[in-house]
Length: 114
Image (cartoon, rainbow, N blue to C red):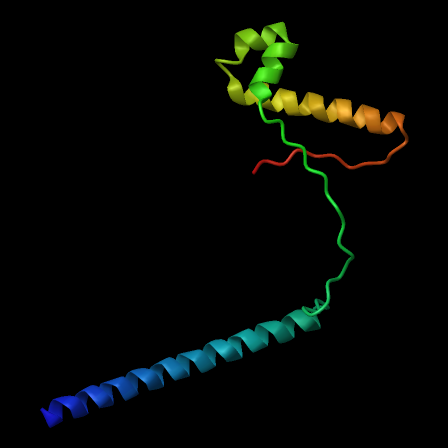
């Protein structure tokens, strides 16, 4: 019984030693990566630019909008839903862009897929 416990303790010590060695290697690798990042000019403690606000618009029922606004969309919507949704977003972007331009607001607009 004592021999078994001795073997178990030695096994646990060896496993702990291997884990400690791996942890030190990972720590050294992380420190090297941080040093390289700082040499490249990327200070990880302070952001490079000021944060900015982004306005996100999500059309909750693009198919309903398309069917309500366009007679041809009523026919095509069931067969090509992705294309109809894309067209709805493009039209919303055009209309919002025109309204902003009319008011003299400079804006960058793009459609993002999430």
